[in-house]
Amino acid sequence: MLTGEPGYAATIMADKVAGMTALYATMMALFHRERTGEGQEVEVAMFETMASFMLVEHANGAMFTPPLGPANYPRAVTPNRRPYRTKDGHVSALVYNDKQWTAFVRAVRPPWADERFATLEQRARRIDTVYALLEETFLERTTNEWLELLRSLDIPAAPVRTLDELFDNPHLNEAGFFETVDTPNGPVRFPGAPAWFSRTPGRVAGPAPRLGAHTGEVLDELGRT
Image 1 (cartoon, rainbow, N blue to C red):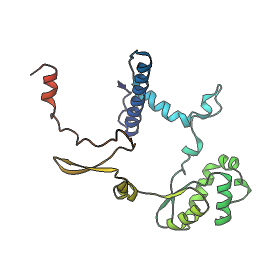
Image 2: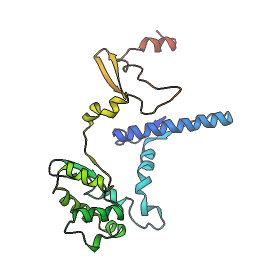
Image 3: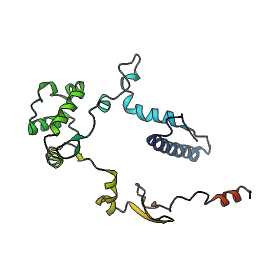
Image 4: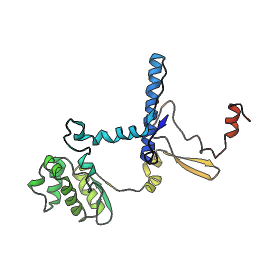
């Protein structure tokens, strides 16, 4: 059973996370029944689910008594935590630990990189400034130039893609991720199951039923006309 507060249930992320939580909660209850023979009621509240989901990272200093700080993960909530703009697009990059930082500074030589940002601890205290300065620097080269350089330095980097590109992704197509199903509206490409099972492989059984498609069967099962 899913329960939730108004205003939260409409968000896409809350819908998906609560659904996954309901799935593994049900699996845990079935495992308990397998071990003990005892059934139980399972309730998954959407509001509590999302609170748990978000506080894994963001509980931070608020967990302590008295609190040591606000409930947020500073690196994640800083306004400049986003893909960097380049000369011709955007790139996602994470110049994070001291090894990556040193390699970046040696290769790029930004004029602002001085002793204030020498260690991870120092950068964490000035994270808003660090991201803002990096944003200025990333504007100096194209996306491909940055990708070539950062990958050579073992710094995580990737181009910013669109969801439309997933339908033409070479890896997904080679892996047979999409399944084409005949529907009343013509052939439809559905995303397939992301998990692989050697004994019981998953598949898209068919399109979603149209409104009222199974009304007769349900009424018959209930003994109603």
